[in-house]
Length: 294
Picture 1 (cartoon, rainbow, N blue to C red):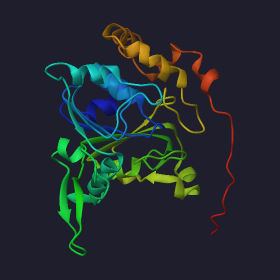
Picture 2 (picture 1 turned 90 degrees about the horizontal axis):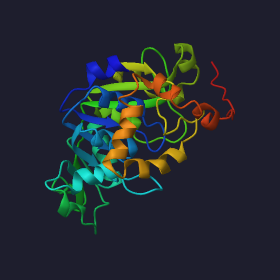
Picture 3 (picture 1 turned 120 degrees about the vertical axis):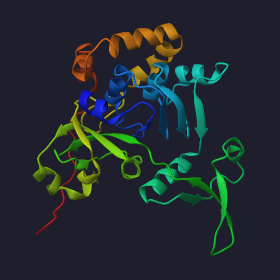
């Protein structure tokens, strides 16, 4: 992880750590904080705790997003402190969920923009000058349009990948595929690295092809406190505790000192919390296989 972040994530980059509640790579975010990256533009549909930590650590100058919060709990306090300070310490650029999906889809398709309907009747176009209108050449209808998003680097967590970067994900999906095809560089972080034969045995589960991947990192428990379907459950207790941990800058600093700056890697992070495997490790539930034939 240290090598991947050092070589591929640079000051001033537009960074996207994707995952829709599921497979959010906290381990990569922590390494970015440890390496002291600055002036990052953070992009993501639903920035939650890991972006709160990156913002609070002083690594970000801007966030491009569609919703920000601690899911089911409340606010992101580091994010709020940065936005509500005078002058603001963080720039923001807000879209709807589908607006962000559309931006990444345009980037993945190498198109300059993407049309959509879902800004009718909202105030977002008035707050965000990047949301514009375009007239359909077929019907004459006026539609909203958002510009393509092409991040410098996307970081995707997955259940498994091979050494070439062919990456398989199952369970709840977000926009991992679109994010990878839209981005200039891609880091895949996997719970385990498997042989090519395993990937080939179940090809429909391959979401990201190896030719789009610049680095592959094996990082068990790398998504905690998020979850990895089939490996470990979401740590709901931590999400609830984060509200009080981060509510004051002092509590936030204590957390970083103990679990980010105070450890050298994810393995050491896990040693600090020996209860996690027993509390969160997933029980086995195997799906019905398919016959691909030959």
